[in-house]
Amino acid sequence: MKKKIAIATLGCKVNQFESAAFLSDFRDRGCEQVPFSSAADIYVINTCAVTARAGQQSRQLIRRAMRTNPGARIVVTGCYAQMAAEEIVEIVDNPVTIIGNGNKDLLVEESLAGCRCELSMLMGNIGHKKEICHLPVQRFSGRTRAFLRIQDGCNNFCSYCIVPYTRGRSRSLPREAVFRQVDVFARQGYRELVITGINVGKYGLDLDEKTDIYTLLDRLCAGYPEMRIRLSSIEPTEINDRLLAVMTGHANFMPHLHIPLQSGDDRILAHMNRRYTVEVFVEGIRKITTALPRAAIGCDVLAGFPGEDEQAAGNTRQLLAGLPVTYLHVFPYSKRPGTPAAGFAGQVGAREKEERVRLLRELDRKKRQEFYQRQAGRVLQVLVERRERKSGLMQGFSENYVPLRFEGPRRLAGTVAAVRLERVEDGVPLGVLAGDGQAPAGEPA
Image 1 (cartoon, helix red, strand yellow):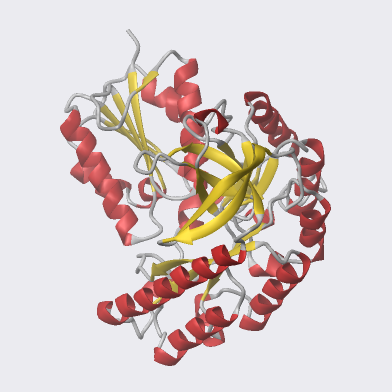
Image 2: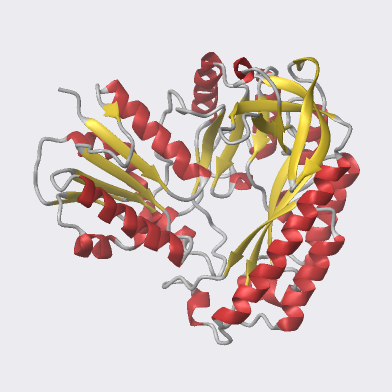
């Protein structure tokens, strides 16, 4: 009888890639996936620990799985499992398996092992890991774009961040394995590939292959011209002429970058150990908009970091208001035990933090609307995802990350369609198919 597997994933695109790898392996071993809300034999929770809220959600998912099937095996992995294994043991009544981030390649085998012991743990010191886990993916179920994790870990040790302690040092996927995985996605017919990692800009620096992120992106674009290539995130210090040459030199590299700012105040940036200044960030934005005027630029912003006074918070808002950024991902600072910032003086009160988050999210809404309005009348190349239930419209993302909705046949799902952005209603960009709607592969943005 097939074992029923349910998987829940929290957090980043790296976790999403890894969960897809688990599912591929489970299916190869004859297992059946069921929704997480259903009765399953094994529940896998791939957790996150970036914020206190993420840890809380991880615990809630564990408890939900125990209630749904008290006889099931619970398998917990991810960053919360890496940093808080003892907390997990305290809340579980079911047999539980806890897998550290450095041993995720063993998760499926361990989950299906015949042992019915109450507790099994595969942890290890993540800081000692020298190689990235090998986690091949066959397919991303229900997705029109594929994620490819090329790198794991981080060497930056920002003072607020738990990730270097839960993910270890930077480790890269060998070039041959990268292209082997992309070949799988290409055969499956994916039209877009999202390159992801914890700090993708450090790709290849730990390998003896003379390949870095810029040469890898160049080879991917050249080797798979029918596939759109999108970069998930890159640090301000990694925006340079080599990156821009790849972006402008290949029509299939999407004009979209996500760049973490965190603060627009140099004093706070130094306190965060972010290793760049506001001036460096501004110069990077200027380079992008000069080379690619229609590019989408997203930013991460952290509100309420210890020592952030009203002037520093105002500096951040003023900086972002004056820059041609497209959207903001705003997070309230969350104290993470074990990080230097958790012990810093000047912790910001909850009310002040909430107000700063509110103001930044208002700015985010304004920035998005301005960007969408600037695209009005243009024909955009939209990777169509699905039909939205409520409106009945097809929806997808353009090359420069505009979330468009439009009238069209369901058969367009999974294809790239030419759509003219007609108007923006209640914050939603609406368009119409241009011509026959067929977008030539690799058409420039």
